[in-house]
Image (tube, rainbow, N blue to C red; front, side):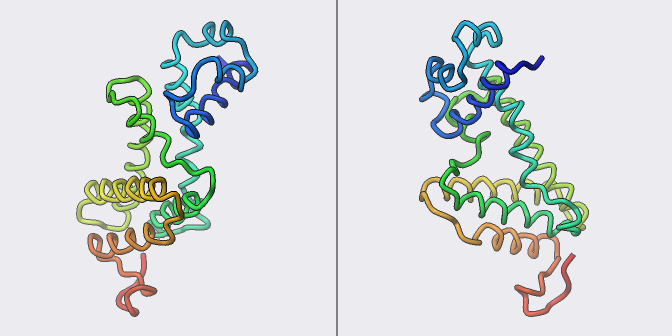
Length: 199
């Protein structure tokens, strides 16, 4: 079910929890920001935990999708993988970047069984699955492992940007390119002195 009140609550929750953390944002502040009463909120969501999980579920798809390049702008699997990291690098340099909302939520909750943590994991697995599918198209000998390694690189680069409070340059995309070269045998002429050919 959707309603203007519900939509405002979910938007405010997604924004505030990402910017300030789940624990730092109380129900009263959340309702004030959304312009709804606490009574209305509890009619829609039995608990704050329900709201945390639903905010991730509703706004998570857009968060993940922005890392996926349209095929006309990144026609090869290699380009699609590297697009994820160049997008992360662009995001990491913006003032509003606070890391990965899915990782942030799970770390703050300290409970992998929490409903919001399960939702967060589903979205992280979507990104990992995307990496694995592109790795398979590249002909990587172990697409599953390469996809996992790329996800770990993504998470590590995201954390680095938050901890340092600064842009990460092109270190993530360069590292991803090196990993692709080492594991799939696909050599980028721009970084290898012309050895071989790109995907």
